[in-house]
Structures are given as C-alpha cells and as structure tokens.
Length: 355
Image (tube, rainbow, N blue to C red; front, top):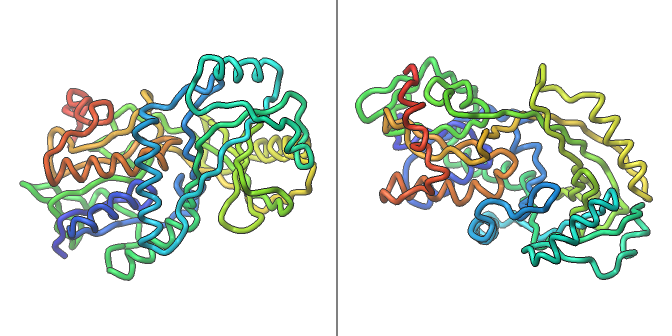
C-alpha cells in the first residue's frame, strides 16, 4: 500500500489530524488498537477556560476555545451528530476559603468567572454550605459519540487498520517510511503515552500521569450544567449517565483502577448529592502530559519523515483541533507552528535520539 501519511492513534489528536487530511484530499491510513482505556475514550471532553484553585485563564484560551467550538460544530454538522454542547460549570465551594478566592477573581475582573445570582437554585439536588459560582463558557465534547462515528467513517473508506502498532517493523529511508507492507511519505505519532517509549521521541519531557473516573447513573439530575465540588461531575450523551473524576497520580504501579479512588468518590457523591446514584463502571487511563504543560507538534529535527502530535495532557479536546490544523498547514503550506508547541524547541534533546 502506498499512501502519503501514516497516522498512529485515533484518539482526539489522531481524529482531528485525519479529518484535516481528508479535507485536503490527502491519502492516509490510521493504525489504532482500539483500547477501551485510552485517555480520549475515558475523558469527559470538558473544555474549561480556567484552571487551578485560583481559576487562572488557561494558555491561549481566547484563541483555542472559539476555534475548538467552531471546528467541533462544523464536524458535527458533517457527521450528522451533536459533537459539542455548552455546559457551564457550577462551582460549589468546598470551603469558605475557596469562596473567598473565587470572588477575589471576580473582583479582579477575571474572564470566565461570575457570581451565580440565585444561590439556592441547586438546593433540591445538592448539599452545599458555602455557595457557588459559575464558569462560563464551558463546553463538553461528546467523545462517546464522536470517536466511534469517526472510526466508522474511516473504516468505510478503508482508512483504518485496527491492530497494535509494532515500531520494530518501522523503517525510515530517504524521504519515506516503510511499515510492513505500507509505504508512506510521513509517519505521525498521535499515540499518547506510546510516544514516551518511542525511540524517536522518548527524550521529550513527557510526564505521564494516571487518572481514574467513575461512570454513574443519576437520572434525577438536570443535565444543563457540569457540577464541581472537588471533582467534576459531567453529563454524558447517554441519558442519565454521568462522568465523575478525575484524579492525578504521578506515581503508579499499573494502569488498573484502584479501590481507594472508587471508595473516595462514592463517599463524595453520598455527601454531595440529594438524589440517588448508582455506579456502573470504574475506569483508569494514563494521560500523555508534559513537564511544561505544552503539546509536542511538528517534524522530528533529524528526520522530516517522522512527526508528532501529542502531549495534550488533560486539555486534549481544546488543543487538538488547533494544533492538528497547524501541523497540517505546516506540512502542506510551510506555515509556522506556535513556538511554544513546536517540537523543534527540543532540537538539541532530540538530536541525541538513538534512531
């Protein structure tokens, strides 16, 4: 098989990359093992414009969030599904100190945070003693719809190979790559933590961390918002099904869910909710985070046949559309990738790679 691009991974990054290549009428093949616990498949798809206890505006929020909303909306129209919905976060303050911190941000005229005028509006469904605020706008990407529908489209066009990628079968030569019986101009790694063990990119400052979530049935809870009290509680596409999480474990022995997280999260729900819930699943996955919290995008400095679109961490749904587009524009039209994301910032490190 002769193609122009071989993409490794069909998480949110691989999905957007293949979408833009299809728009450009380029030939490509995606290789993906369809693991149920990949980060994109267990994420809630939340696009949140602020982060941390101080509700600081996320990197490039004013550029990334409008672009993402527009692109998901357009993709949804093309696929005939709802891919994104606005679900603002109702932030229930777990302590008086957190309430003070939130209102300090409002007084500083910070973007995206505001008081919630009717403080007892949610009292029929939640216990909360210190009030609440609102983060606006916040979106949820319906990954549980988008990823399988796009996967089906790729299969129909014979653009997906469902198997484990085996890097020992990859051969790089002048201006092309060979993988088993596939010849391509370029290979692009969108395989999450797989790239942290890849000899072409394993010297990059990845900082993988483990996250866990529960899927719970809460049929009596209004789906108009995402709710937060220590953890995020977000509605999924299936009626009555909610996602709650997530934690960050920087040291872990395996990829498996832990009893401690389940116990702690169910205790939080029992204290927080006034309506019944039922746990239906417990999932865990490893995020491809980075030490400097910036993605890795672009061509390997030693070999222009090898590229990466990775390192999105917890911000994959917001970052992937913009940086997939920037990578395609760089490959096809030689346009610049944002310097804080361009992998060439690690040229000296990657030049030590053992290829």
